[in-house]
Picture 1 (cartoon, rainbow, N blue to C red):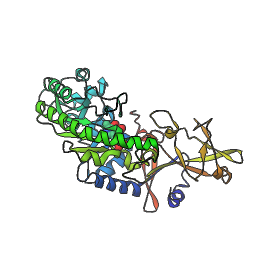
Picture 2 (cartoon, helix red, strand yellow; picture 1 turned 180 degrees about the vertical axis):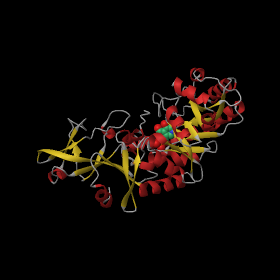
Picture 3 (cartoon, protein in one colour; picture 1 turned 45 degrees about the vertical axis):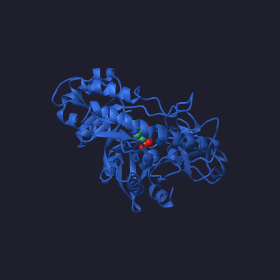
Picture 4 (cartoon, rainbow, N blue to C red; picture 1 turned 135 degrees about the vertical axis):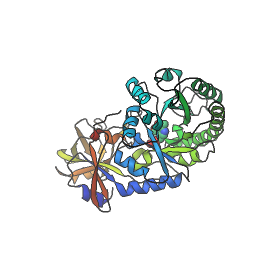
Length: 389
Ligand SMILES: Cc1ncc(COP(=O)(O)O)c(C=O)c1O
């Protein structure tokens, strides 16, 4: 974290959350360049700050939002967003009713489905202006016996299954199939840069998965188009897979979110490096011994398999580490290491979160630095009164 940023944010009361807007802008530019002209759909879960989302969307390379819940999408639609895909299925009956009853929202939003049971929950209010749905397809790699390289999402995997699902949707009144989403989390979300045996294995699996996926995704899209000739988009990818995703002719747009704030879990890719753009600062409140400081707060652990890589990373001063028996605490976090000796009560420690959007769930807003000063404050979704997930 640059000294200039630390100086700018030194006066902010802890817990202090900071966005480096210049880095965010450079990341936006870099992500658009990586997409080589393919439109980038911005994954809002990896931001959860409306002002950041809106600023990113001003870039000509960005198109639309990949929202994470239907209430969020309805909220964004009310604030003027008109191209929203909810990236995950919903069983929120009240939100589905609100969508079905609102002609403007129905035009702006597509919701994710992969099961007829989800279609059953959608109220049929208008057969001429149907609810727009997108078919989620599983693209994890099963080429190594006993291993699933990827996440467990949609039950639909094959072109035949996708075509059958598309026909089921076509036969339903009140819904219209407008898109296909096939998210390759194993390429987009698993860092491939480590110079270890594990890193090597990931690179091999990644290459095999990219090849398998290109053929299968093309076949899936062709099969779906037969039942849904008006298919508008085929979405794939995420920050870690932009290059391989946009190389597929079957894909019409790529999703990205994490790369804009560029949290710690996105430092480890071989093909790109974005700039850290979001930080948080905590204050030292006591010193249990000479080589340990305790900061107030800290347990802002990221989602995913519980492991040390989900902990926030203390980035300044360098050389601080968690104590194995305590980790990051609910209220207090002891940090040890050489740097602790030089710290006194009232000093600040700066951290980066492991993931991109989850930091915003912990704070009501961010101070925004640009051009050498703090220029504005951006409320988080929470700060605007919304806890979507
Ligand atoms: C459906 C979907 N698309 C894309 C992404 C990629 O987002 P990011 O760029 O934040 O990794 C995710 C992340 O989990 C996702 O769930």
